[in-house]
Image 1: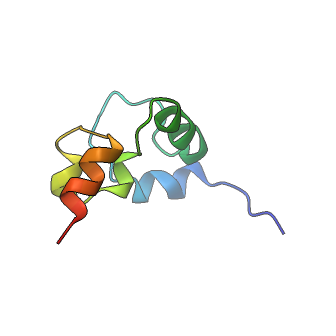
Image 2 (image 1 turned 60 degrees about the horizontal axis):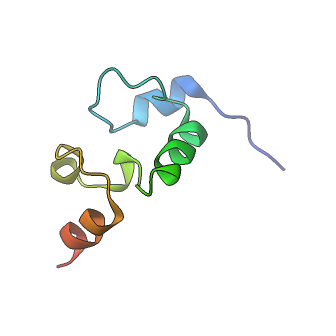
Image 3 (image 1 turned 180 degrees about the horizontal axis):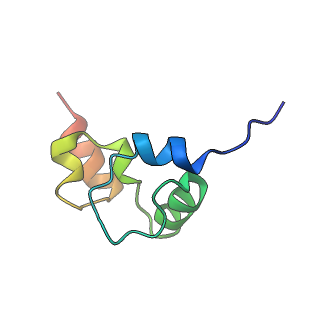
Length: 66
């Protein structure tokens, strides 16, 4: 069974701090955009990691290591 996407609910939980982003709440569009750029969405990162705006996979691995 497929669940309907709720943009309103998604926006409440979106951790992206990039304010002019047109994809907030549209998670599928966000993932597609960042994947196409070889990146990960901000919601994959810690708060501190997200604020760097470096969405690269390399940065994610680097800052996620203990």
